[in-house]
Structures are given as C-alpha cells and as structure tokens.
Image (cartoon, rainbow, N blue to C red; front, side, top):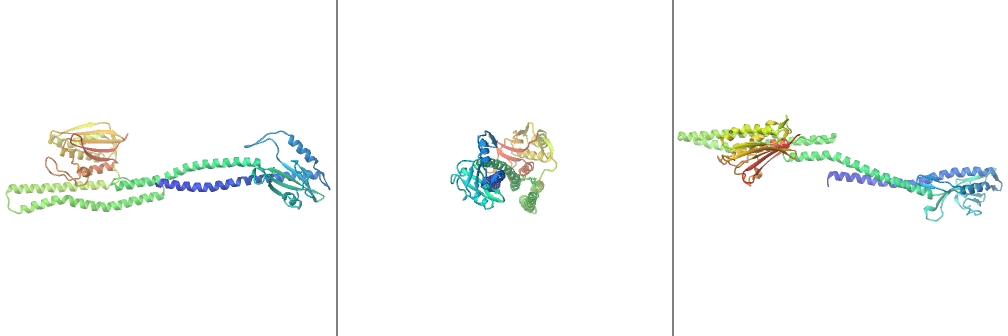
Length: 475
C-alpha cells in the first residue's frame, strides 16, 4: 500500500469517526432543543391565558365562558400556514382549566370536562405555587402522540383559585425535527465529499515531494547525473539537502575508489608490455628488433596517455550534477559537425559516411553532444569493413531527438551486448585485432544521462550494429 493511500485512509478514518460522533450528537440534540422551544412558548401562552381568566374570576373559581367561546370560534376558523416543510390548517393547542381542587372546568378537546386532574404534575405543582409542567403520550410508547403541558396559576384575592394549562402535541415538531435531521445529514455528506477532495489535495501536496525525492534517489542509485528536486517546506528542503549531502559523501568515496581501480586496471596491461619490452632491450639484438620494441613502448605509452585522458574526462562528467551552459541546438547541424570531425578517418579507411537529417531541436551542451556522436561514429568505423557504409540518421519521435548510427560490420556478439557500456570493456577490432581503451561508450552513456537521455547498442537485421543516442527534444 502506497504512502499516499495510507495517509488518505488515516485522514478519512479520523474524519469519519469524528464526523460520526459529532453528527450523532448533533442529531440527538435537535429534538430536545425543539421541545425546549415549544415549552418556552407554552409558558407565555399559559401565563397570558391565566391573566385573561383573572379578569373574570370569583371566589368559586375562574369564569371559563369567554375561553369556551374563543376556542369554539378558533376551531371553526379556516387558515393555511406553511412553516418550512410543515403545512398547518387547524389549531392543535390544547387548553384546560381546573379549580382549586384540580377538577376540570373547561377542556378545549371536550374529553376531560369534570374529571379530576389533581394527580397530574402540571396541576398539583401549580396549586402548590411551583412551576408545573408535564409530558404525556396519549398512546404509551408512541412518540408521535406526545403532548407537552405547561400550567400557570389563576389567582383571586392573593390565593390560587385555579389552574390553566396549555398543551401542544409534538407531531408537528416531529416533522420539523425530521426535516432538520435530513438537512444536517445532507450537509454532513456534502461536507464529507468536500473534505475528501481536500484530503486528496493535501495527500498529493504532502506525498508528491516525497515521490520526487524517491525518484531522485533511484536516479542516483542508477548512476544518473540528476539535480536534486525542488521541495516545498523547510522540513522537506532539509531532507532533500540531507539526501544531496549523503550523495556527495558517498559519491566522493566511491569516485576515488572507482577511478583508482580503473586507473590501475587500465594501465596495468600497457605497463606490463612496456616493462617486458624494456627488459628485452637490455639484451643484444638486431637493430630491427630493437626498433620494433621501441615502437611497442611508444605505442603503449600513447595508450596509457589516452586512458588517463579518457578517465579524466569521464571523471569530470560524472562529477557534474547538471549541464553547465546549455543552448538550443539544431540536430542536423550537430550531426554535420560530428561527420566533419571524422570524415578524414572514414576516407582513409575507404568507408562511406551518409547522413539522413530530419527536423530535430534540443537543448544541451554542443561540445559534449558532438563528442558523443564522434565516439559513436568512430566506434562504427572501427568495426566496418572497407567499401561498406555507415549511416547517421537524425529524427524526432516521442518528444526525443534521436541520433542513430548504423554500420554493416560484423555486429556485436550476443555475450558482449550487456557489457558494451562498461568501463574498459572492449572487443578486438577486425582490422588490427587490437582493443580500444574501452571508455568511449561509457563516455557516450554519461553524456546522454547528463542530458536526461540515454544510449543503446544493438545488432541490425541483416548484419552490422546500430548505436542510438537520444535526448529530450524541444519545440
């Protein structure tokens, strides 16, 4: 599982757990808040009704005739009210009035007239001078039949002579609560989707730099000359700097060790040949033999010089992390420059050199790229028989500028193909039987990597070999 997916799942799990508990707590609080609001309005209603009844109260109790006629008229009244998702067409306010003993003098429903309500909390507490309220279900266990009752005392001559109770069924509130819960759930779902998108962006913002750093580490592992990626944030920049410092430290040690070994390996054979020739020259020998041994010594000395020069050049390239001075280069012009550099050698060996140049443009260091092409052309010449042809093709494809050098020589043995870009790996030249320094193709590959490209060598169908150098193209 990728780090991006793990981070996303962790953040999503935290959001879902937190969102679930918050949403559940919020939903659980909706209905009680609605009921509290209803109770608060019933307090006002009961107090208002008590004040109205006290205007016509006697020692026998409240006069409920005015209340009866008012409710009768209200129940006959037609109206329609839209309260959010609730449509209301009839009053459902319940009111009853009791005397000082708790006996019902008036009931707006007409069902409880004359009954004893002294056992109900709203009545008994109000008669004691306390706040009286109750919640009762008409059908036990059915929240849809729940009714909230709030009472207020009716006073005469400083004493409580009765109780007026205002009640409100909760079925209307239940509809409003259900609508509110739906809106909360829809909002939570929309917020969750929005947060998920934000989490995806955050995960990408956090992980993308780490992925770039991972790609950089792999490129370093593969020996590519790449620059450290630009990273956001102080922590990531410090991590990138630490990677770069670690790379420099490791490459410094490996560089010294590698080139010390390379130098020893490269000059060992020429030095052995020089030593053997020098020892033989201590003996008396004909002048012709002495001249031949002296020529061998000079040739091996030249070879050592070439190895040292190539190693220094390769070391310089590998020590670079980026191109120094780049310019826009026309691929055809670059190919013509490389052809001009080796034309004399091709003429001397009686090998034809043809060029097929298409439109190709690239950015890079002209000197390095020309040197890479010259090395490939020289390599093709070394393995080409007289009167054969080498073709240099330049074209653009898949955002690449591609240079292909094809010869009609003997090709590369299958066992040698995986090793041709290794340092000091060289095959005998068909004409002389001698090997080269074995550093030319390694140099080509290093130049290609430095430009963000690559190099390959393969056998052609019908005989010969084909070397390919490609670098990123530009518009």
